[in-house]
Length: 314
Length: 268
Image (cartoon, rainbow over all chains, first blue to last red; front, side, top):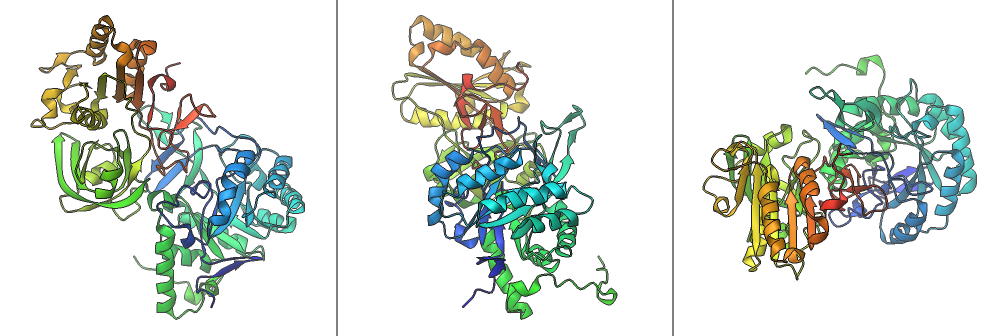
């Protein structure tokens, strides 16, 4: 019997809607001592580039209240070492393994994916076209729908594996970029990447991270993420993986109501590596209490008629 | 090997204004830990503060470990409000500890302010095994000493205070270099291992004054803003030699590094 938490994202199915977000779960092997990866529907690796990237100078992160600003600069080992050292460990991990790819130019995305095709145990790719912390490429790809479409189309030609495009929230409207990624052949969309943010030390008048601005994540960005997911859901027909500030089961439910078929948890994993297991249990409990058979029934069930949209007194 | 373990606080005390010490029962982490490692502490089951707080493991006695910290923000403030019987969520032991060479005959340990607790852990570890260790502590004044007045370690440490206040007045590097000079005349410098933990100012001063080539080993434990604590987020980078890039991660490559491999921020 299918699990109540089972979700389909196009051709790829997941046993739980909880996926670990890129950059927050390493290469997929670091957390396995302290949290069983089987509780995850899947994970997305740290973004892989064509060569090793050293990343940005320190300091690279600063905590701001409930949130975190980071500017890691996509530091990663590069595709060669990844294929030789990390990917061989994937077949033993009982969860969906999605490899994130981030490059400076379109041709490199094609090259990296072509190299990753040699490795077994990879279930799909997430194209990171929305990192706010690199000088070349990064979120500039996702801010330009024509570029987004061509990039996804090029990668689509290189692989039969499942492809998800990760979109930036740092645009006026996510719909054009979402439609472009769909037109290019993406199987799913994930959003949002981090929101451009900044923190200043008023005493020294210095920025609190070396690159001055960085990517803001954590609970404070959830309202922004919900709005962007809702906009994308109304623009495309491919499944959407929502993320941004998820820490509780009700956050997951809210993202699914506004149109996400699955979610990613990110920053919260740093504090609670075992969060996915907890969320699964709580979601099952919620389904039982509400008499809902499958979690996937929630997707896009937002009620927007005026009578129902009453404000909640606080 | 690292574990997630609930630590039950057995003692907690404000040992100086704004400086706290707690002891917590954490049998698994205590059995795995070595001097120089740290734990990543989740103070309460809530996301404010969002992240864990990395704290060096101070003393380990049987099933209990000591954590010492200064209140610098919301997380450290909340930690200081806990009491005996409260639980904290510990991820650890994390990072690599200090290297202890079998052939070292002299050990010099230099704590700077809140960098003292891991030095005390290492000092106890060495002296319990009959190794000859000298413990130094550098502070601005009495209020910076991360040890309570009745702590037996106080009488064993050579304390140097910038403000004097009844201690030798000056910088901790001064008596350290006096001892190194003395060891040099006895030709035992090559059997000497030196360890430190403290602010960047101390690390820079050691780099400028210690005779690098003459010593058997020089190691320093670093602190940096940290996210995950296990090498996943890459947030705690420092500039240091020895890896494939100009950066190394305090949490997983460190926190212990060769003293002369690290770049003190703003030193160039």
